[in-house]
Length: 102
Image 1 (cartoon, rainbow, N blue to C red):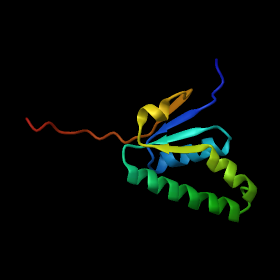
Image 2 (cartoon, rainbow, N blue to C red; image 1 turned 30 degrees about the horizontal axis):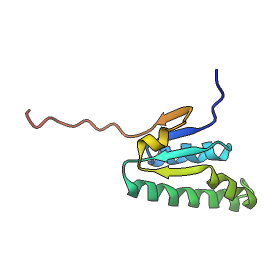
Image 3 (spheres, rainbow, N blue to C red; image 1 turned 120 degrees about the vertical axis):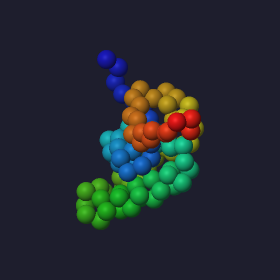
Image 4 (cartoon, rainbow, N blue to C red; image 1 turned 90 degrees about the vertical axis):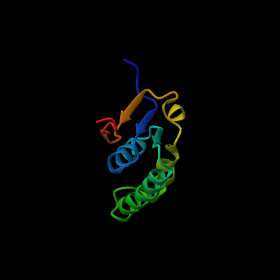
């Protein structure tokens, strides 16, 4: 089995942003994708706040912050997110839509 070198996380909600953050913390490049630019912006902010708590509590060295964020990329382009990814993790919500013909 090939070693995982790059990860794509599909969905920047609460779970997706945390999964992407943990992948980046392990040192792997990870692309966080969402269809909504607002969700991407919220994910970036939440990740920054979460990392700040890690640093404040001594869980992460301040010097490691830049390397962690260097592993993260953000996009609303699905093709770009999964390009060269060895693993894609889908955490987008499932929303059933009713047919208007019913």
